[in-house]
Length: 188
Image (tube, rainbow, N blue to C red; front, side, top):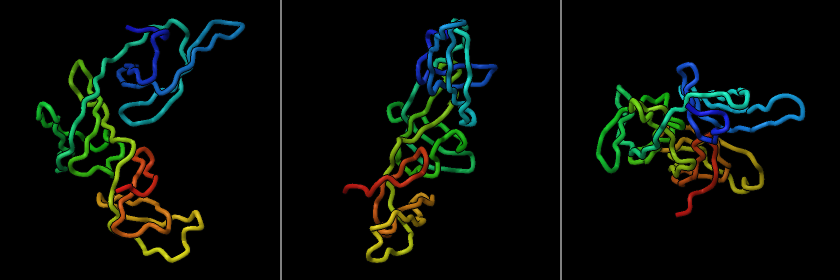
């Protein structure tokens, strides 16, 4: 058991059988009344963020989690198959628990959050930025670099991303996996 004094970013809590991670917290000590802790919690099962206020000193159930690296192998009708790079253990992870799954390609490394007590996978995260090749986009016109206009482009994983007008087919671009946005051209 932990108390609100033990809160830190990334800490995992069990609240009524649902797992949450602390995204942000703030200890507030008003001039009048008791101290309290204001938190933003991310639900690990559906990704929703909610705000919760705790009285100072309240006991909470902390969940011990481990972050483990896995390499993506392939997808089948059962889910996404991954392998641990050191133990060569293979696991299947459902697509709903993987953030940014549309940017996942063979050989990519991900980080899985595993419940240390019962060895279940809670979530799986791609790196914040990935480099993908554009397989299809409309051709750009000379002089299109002056505006901030965007056009749709399909990348090698099949996902559609909005890119600037000067980007052409065959180019490699950097994509932010958290929101699916174009970051820059990839440096060769």
